[in-house]
Length: 176
Image (cartoon, rainbow, N blue to C red; front, side, top):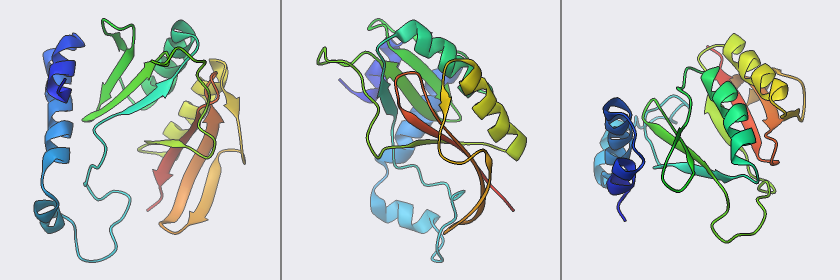
């Protein structure tokens, strides 16, 4: 089934479907046309070149995950999840699609060992709000406390936490 057909079946609002369509359309462009949109210099984190059509994480308790992700993603301005006909949580924000689902194979959901999902934030305060909302909804703080780190992309304000199912998340703001 095509990504667009799945969106229609997910019973999203027209605005959310349009936002998701835009994200999918960007990923369908041939690489040659994308090269013209990316500056020849090393791209920053903010360069608009979307590679992913969506991200999915597994959950052993969809209701608990909805409380967690509604709070965490709400801290960056996302609307609460919509539930599709497969009881998956669907979040659409700024053209990106994030889903939470029980594993299709029937096995327990586990966090990806070595995997991290990063959420872009507009300010350091928003990073702190994401972290606080996640911890308040049963997530656990991990790595260093929220703060500035020097990285290969310059100074970043980061906060790491795990959702109740063990998925590792990062709230990130690239400092000017």
